[in-house]
Image (tube, rainbow, N blue to C red; front, side, top):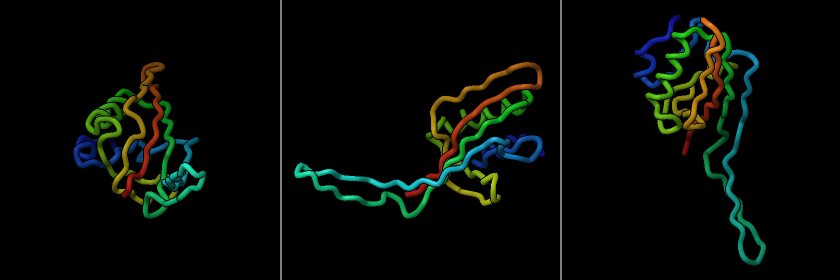
Length: 128
């Protein structure tokens, strides 16, 4: 499957030309959004700020061709960094998470040589 402008416009994270969304090594974390309110007397109140666990993926991509690098850059710009929401397929189990975003407003793209670029970024699941 090739990079597709229709995926970018539909809010679906694009796949590599190998039909993958990530390469190894990649990491996946399960996070809980907990809040702690501390009072003047030293007591604390804890509560969960989301319904359940949230997922986060650290993606590192190497040996990308110019078209793949341009597609990642275009998708990142279309989502305006961490502002936008998109669907992301978990590389481990294939489950699609419908409301994800980039964790940063900056994206580093490196072109090492012809047909050999790399980038890394973090994708977060969003939920209220």
